[in-house]
Amino acid sequence: MTQIRAVFFDAGQTLVYADPGVGAVYASSAVLAGAKDPDPGRIEEALTESWRAFGKEVKGSPDDGAASDALEREKWRRFTRDIARQVPGFDAASFDYEVWF
Image 1 (tube, one colour):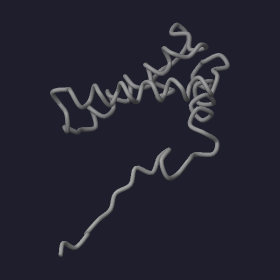
Image 2 (tube, helix red, strand yellow; image 1 turned 90 degrees about the vertical axis):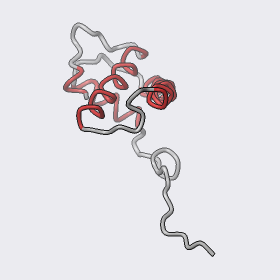
Image 3 (tube, rainbow, N blue to C red; image 1 turned 45 degrees about the vertical axis):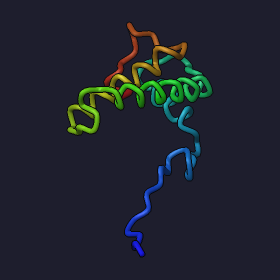
């Protein structure tokens, strides 16, 4: 009989839910970076859409499975910019993505 040595869970938004929600947290931090009253609900929707696309991109990329601080930082930069592109209130001219990131 095989002994189970570990069990892994994807806790975020699966077993554990943030309060306030992720959309509210992203919205409040986005305001600090220059966004104009972004809708937390729309951010949640954009986050879901971006996460699905992000997962497909990572699985099919040449660096699939590779990890480094630089790669992770670049992936999260692309992910957060994709969210911002989908939500009204993120004016590229006045919004500081690096502060938000």
